[in-house]
Length: 473
Image 1 (cartoon, one colour):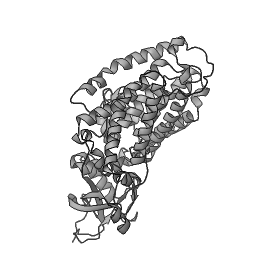
Image 2: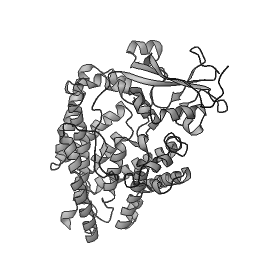
Image 3: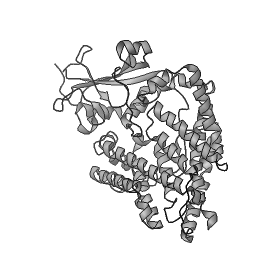
Image 4: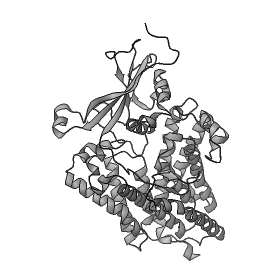
């Protein structure tokens, strides 16, 4: 069975598996710490309400069979434990079949979360983690060398991530073709990081070079992943460098990190492979059968990539086995932010004591410098960015957010950096206003200490109080 495996990639597989386990751990920890306010029994988009109207076949999940906050918490904390065990290398201590089953556990648990997560889990990196996690099940452990076909499928995913993102840019916003998108992107991206202000103020000629280099990395270099070594390793290394540049420039949850992880098994690390027996027949049959199914399902993302109406981040099956990816097909020129405020006054007036809620990641106080959160994903902050683009994005959940703030709901307040009201004295009214934000100049930063300058645009939500609350005098 020597044709079936590639022993030279054993170290790349090992590094890939440990890094993927680390990302699983981040994803499950993220779910454990945020689910009650987002999709819990009293969440903004409760799972019980979702499973009442969506059948199992469309969204397979353990939580279709049973849901309670306690059961969900048990599942995601179990996901954390299994991910930590995989990170520590437990799969290498088990028989081949036992290691495979251990990798099935986080995939099945996270699939269950994503398939009931609704808007909060609609990001492309959720499907990407599931697709890569499914392939990891069949990559083997120390009892067998890495299967060639699974290594190929991992490269195929990386190709689709990069090439799909490159195509959507060239077909989408004209600024990508004019090399001008980075004149705006660092300022208008969903969640800036601590260095984003400095990236924005780089010279415009350098921005042009960045965009051109991005096009090369996403439209040319992916084809080199299938070239002989050392060309494939060099292509993967270039992608890793590009992704690390993106890590420095913004907060994109684990999108950049999982792309880096995908590039690791492409690299032929200079290390002597250990002596392992040949792959057992049952393993060859299982891996070959699964690979054939995945290759057959690949016609859908291929058809999407070659289509003039290419879409980004689409799953074609409820198991998220083979998906299509892409990012920033269009770039906003202006940054808008929704600022949420509350007041304890009985009758809300413009001159009332309106106090602003502070979010953890999204811009708020112009003097507060952005922090680094990725690969951790602040889901509410990201959805607030979409809400500022259009109120339609906020329709399903924003009213529930306001209601929870009016109740001083502990779980919801846990998603924020700070509430301006004490726990025993919730606000009587909540309002939301839309502001235009722009980065300050170097001179403004020195004079004011503020990295943002904001200008009021319009009302987003008029003063609102709980239904049934006693009216003011």
